[in-house]
Amino acid sequence: MIPQVTSAILSLLGVVVASTPELVIPTENGTTWEYNMTEEAGRGVRLADAEQREAGTLHTAVAYRIDGTRVVDGKMLLQFEMHRAGLLTNTDLITVDQQGIQCWGRLDPAGTLTKFDAPQSIVAAPITIGTSWDFNTQTEGTQVHQHYEIVDQADIATAAGTFRAFHIRGEQTSPGRMIIDRWFMPGIGIVKDVTETQTDSGELLRRVSLELKEKPKIEARPEIKVRPGVNKLTISIGQEAVGESRKMFLSTTPKICARWQGHGLKVHAKIRVLWIAEEVEGVAPPDYTIDEATTIVTAPDSHGVFTLACPETGWTPGIYRVEFYVDSALTEAAKVKISKSAATRF
Image (cartoon, rainbow, N blue to C red; front, side, top):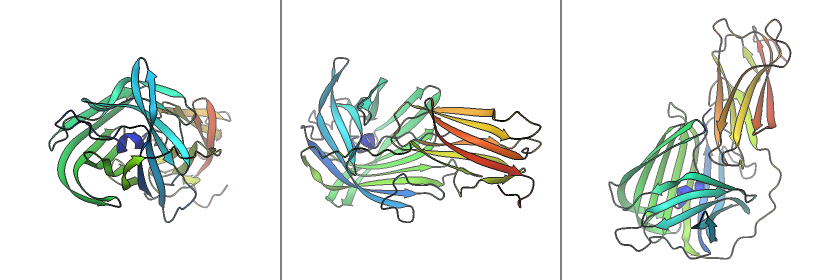
């Protein structure tokens, strides 16, 4: 299982104190950053949004806004909201001070608070070429490792204008491969951000790009739509981590990959996947659970792959079922037929 470890609000607001004590982003209540957002899906990966999807690419508007403060365990934290297509997707609870930007907890769209055992440092001071830092943590058995470095300062063109910005390069090596390129302008914030999640071999799974539309300004809170009911997971079955979906496999297939994509998941929710022999004669009774795996969600749009390797004697022909649970609730399921002949059908 390869959960995506990422949070869009952290990607955008990774800013710190420069060489002077003066803060380098505005922190007044109501300050809003508006971005053009583009999502590009890799081969065989399905985007979450059904609207505006063209050839695996989605364009939408995203806004980040400071909405007052909240006291958690005696600490005053800024509430940074993310608004997308009229929906409030999440709120990060952050401090901006001489230590930089630190995230201490997160609110889901329903307002449920998740506190972190230790604050997540987003960018370390000082903002200067050569500054580097690491983020390491472990969440219920899932090890996370990310490394960041300020590698350059150069002009970057955006819809909001051209900025002399610092280029921050980040790389996640565990639990899944992710490359982050951010351009930060003192006094403004992140003016551009490109985040790619990749397979272990470097093949693209998803690319999310954000470009600042205009300089931050104080605005009223956007009207929030009623969130429609959506499936928490989109699933597909295939022979590889990335590629076409299928329901039938030969008994000699080297591996079967059960792929899932989250939509508005609660951070720290548990994803549980079961591999069940539904009708497999001579191997197990009906509906027998052969294998299972679990992982912990680290972002609302986490995704992963449950990989089953072919037994040494080959797959036993029959009908199998893959069940996906979010916490204890059965959310999605898919049937798979394994046969000795490609001509066999459901």
